[in-house]
Length: 316
Image (cartoon, rainbow, N blue to C red; front, side):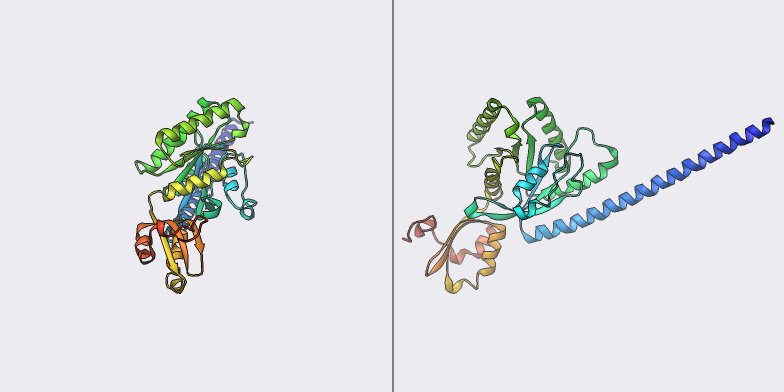
C-alpha cells in the first residue's frame, strides 16, 4: 500500500475525531444551556411560591441536615396521615433537589396552629459540580423560612456528628450571612443508639435547656421510626415561632362575632391560640398575636383574671 494512502487515512481519522469532539462539545453545551434554563425556571417558580406563602402570613419551617440524617423521614412524621403517603423516603444523595412543601400542625394537640414545612436537599462534604447549581437553587428556600430544623443523625459517632454539623452550619452561614434565623436541632435515630449513650445525650440536652433558662428547648431528641420527640418538636416550634408575639385574652360577644370574624381568622393563621372556650354570652380566646393584629383586636381585649374558664373552670 502506498505511503500516501496511509497518511491520507490517518489525516481522515484525525478529522473525524475532531468533528466528533466538536459535535460532543456542542451537545454538552446545549444540554448545559437547557439545564440552566430549567433551573432558572424552577427558581422563578419557587420565588412566586414563596411570595404567595409570605403574603398568606403562614410561618415557614425548613428542614436542613446532612445527607441521610433522616430529613425526609421527619418530614413524613410531621405530616398528617393523608399527606405522608406521598412523601418518598430515599437514601440516595440529592433525592430532594426539588423541595416539597406541606401544611402541618404545630403546638399542643388542643391548641395547634398551621405552618408550612419545606424539605431541602441533604448536604454532603464534597458537592458534585453537576448538581451544584440545583443544590444552591434548592437552598434558596432556606432564606424564606421563619425557622430552621437542623436534623442530626444521633446514631453516628460524636466525631462524625460534629463534622457533619459543621459542614451544614458552614453552608448555612455562607447562604444566610449574619441573618439571625432561629433554629432547633433535632437529634434523630435515638432508637439506634446504645441506651447509655442515649441517656447521656438526654442529660446534656436537659442541662443545656436549664442553663439557657428556656421554657422549650432548642434541642429535641427523638426518632422518626418510633415517633419519640415528634410532639415535643411541634411544641418547641410553636413556642419559638410565637415567643416574641403579644399575649392577648379576648372576650368576643356573640353579637360581635360577625364583624370581627376576619380578624379571628387571621389570628388563627398568623398567631397561636392557646385556649378557647364558648358560653352563652361570648367566645373567649387566649392567644399569641402579632402586634399589629393585637391592636385591631384591642376592643375585645380583657385581663386574664376576668376569665377563668379558659382552662376548665367556671367564669368568675
